[in-house]
Length: 379
Image (tube, rainbow, N blue to C red; front, side, top):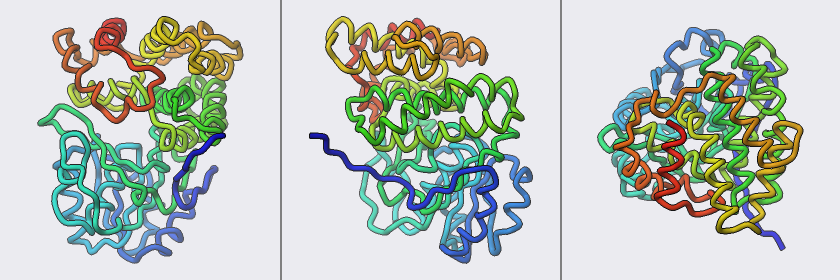
C-alpha cells in the first residue's frame, strides 16, 4: 500500500506563447501588481507593459536577506495586492518570499529555516504568479523560496504550502535568450532535481512519473539546448524538465547535491545551478558507492541504473555516471576549486550540509568522510 500527499501551483499553463496570459492572470488576482524581474527587465518590456498599475523591482542576483527586506518595504509602499516573479529561479524565489512577508509582521529571519526562528505565518501570502525565464529551479511549482545570508555563509529556505503560485506560466520561448553558461547550469539543476527525487526514499508513483519524464527530456535535449540555443524543441524539453523537476522535488525531496550546493553557494556566492552542476557527478558516485557497501539491496541502486537508461539509452549505473561526466565536460562546468572552495573549508561545509533540509531525500546517510571525499573529487 502506497500513501502520499501532493501539492503544487493552483494552475499551470505550459507551452510556447503561454506568457501572453500574464495580464489577464494578474488582473484576476489584484489591481496593484509588484513585479520582481531580473537585472535586464527590458527583455520582457512587452509583457510588463500589459500590467496596469504595476511596479517593477529588479533582483540582480541570488537574493540576500537585505534584498528581501528592501523588496518587502517597496511592495508595501506600492500597496501591492499581487506579486509576480518574471525571471530566473532567484527572481521567482525572491517574489515568492516577498509575497509571503508583505502581509506578515516581523523580519525575514523570523520565518526562515536553520538560521532563523522558523516561525509560522499568521496571514496568508499575497497571490503569487510565476513566469520563469530560465529552465532550471522549478521554483514556479515549489512551496519554498531560497535566500542567502552572507553573514552566516549559507542559503536557507522559507517554506509553506500557501507560498505555492496561484498561477505558473511556463513559456519555453522566454528561455531562448539564455546564454550558454546559464543554459548549462540551470539545465543541470533541473536534471539534478529529477534525478535526486527519483532515487529519494520519499519518491512516490506520482513523482516517479514526473522525474522519469524529466530525465528522458534532459537526456535528449540538455546538450542540444546548450549548443543550439535557438532550438525551440530543445528549449521546450528543458523547460518541461525544469517544471517536472519542480513538481517532483516539492513532494519527494532532494539529496546530497543540494545539501552540499546550498553551503558551497553561500560561501562562494556562486549561482545555485552552477554549484549543483559542479557536485552532481561525484555525489552520484559517492551515493552509489555507499549503497553498494552498506545497503546493496536498496531499491535506489536500481533507480540509478534506470536513470542511466532514461538519460543515455543504456541501462546501468555505469551508463549513468559516464553520461553525466561527459555532459558536465561538454557543458564546460568548472570544479568547486574554480568556484573558490578550499580544502580547509571541507569540514565546515560537510557539517553544515549534513544539517540542511536538502539532505532529507538522499537515499543513504553519508558520513562526514564520505561527504569530504565527494568534495575532494569535485575539486
